[in-house]
Length: 256
Length: 249
Image 1: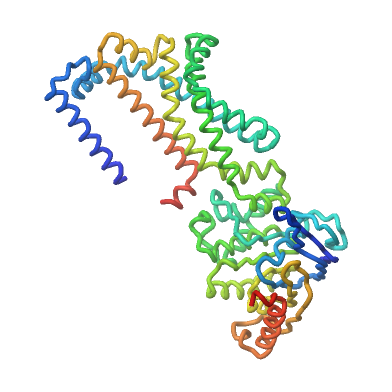
Image 2: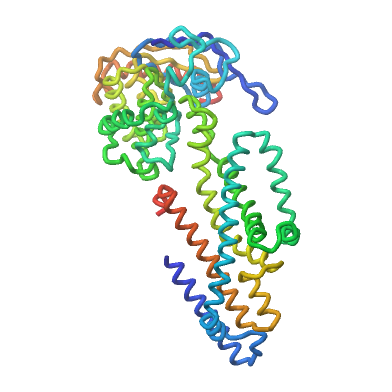
């Protein structure tokens, strides 16, 4: 499994103006890696995901997954947008089985797989609840379970914890690391949270504001599994300083 | 349910004031009979009322079901083929400038004096609010959810069936509740214009003979029927959308 973005460019029309959203974005992610893209809001991170997912076409450049430009997104990746997008009319179990249902795969086997993962996702006992009855953290975990159950090796996670409070978010980060270590998937993770990026990633790309491009890249070598004490370790603090510096450089002076 | 108690109280006060007013002001009974008279006729005529109510109910419910089927099918088709929507939707809205009541005589002319024209009038009256509410509900469904499903490999039909239609259900049921009450009105209008049975017929007959208390007895039957259909729609909506009511509950 590998994914290569080569010199992606994308612009869109806002009224009469032509806005350059992405310019020269190149990225290379290998099997089993956890890679984050960090950047301020509105720098085109989500647009980049839409391009990888086939929801938008790049104006320039190409996306190759396992060497192929003509991949079917549904066959190689699963995508988790910022909103949980759970269907209020389906139970939690039926929601997480949506990808199985859409592909017409074996629902019985899917249900067994799903039920086996409910405890790991902290959703045990909520199989037949409706999403309206879940807390914010549980909704995000359900959305992530849906993404995992899609069974694709590459997972694109777009700020999955952006809407959660700080305490819940930190618990979810630890939990996500645990899941990732167990399930052995490749993850590209969008965030604007510096701590989150360092805690979770093998590698962090820093995206500049419009037009978005990935200019800097940081390797995170803190050994796994990282614990809550890792965030006050020397390594962590140094990386954080560097990352904050890189992000500050990219803000235009008028914004700071 | 506390609102229900209040409404019943209000109704009781209204009836009491009416009864007293008629009594004290000495209004002739053929103009405005007291509620007690109406009650007497409801009890006395109950067989007649039930017989004709059954006919009206049959027309109203058939019309409503027809409108539900047609409305859902048209809304699905318009959502699936956008060109159909852009061609038909404006016509659908403009068609509401034509009051169905004015078309009713034509419908009677075309379809005769049986049950069918009443069903059609009731159906036509229900059709618009139902169709428009379903279309509105579908349009309001989350665009990002459709995108997510496409990434999962869903066909357009699957997006429509699994996401857009269920998302429109709350809107559909609001439309259904309004239409349920309209359907009785539609059936009665159909009966006014020519029929041998139905509440509309006895309503006219009693009016022509100045039997006002009996007119009001028939009106009461119509009100009860509309309320029943409204309540039934609410019940169905709770059965079909437990998620919607549980969240609000």
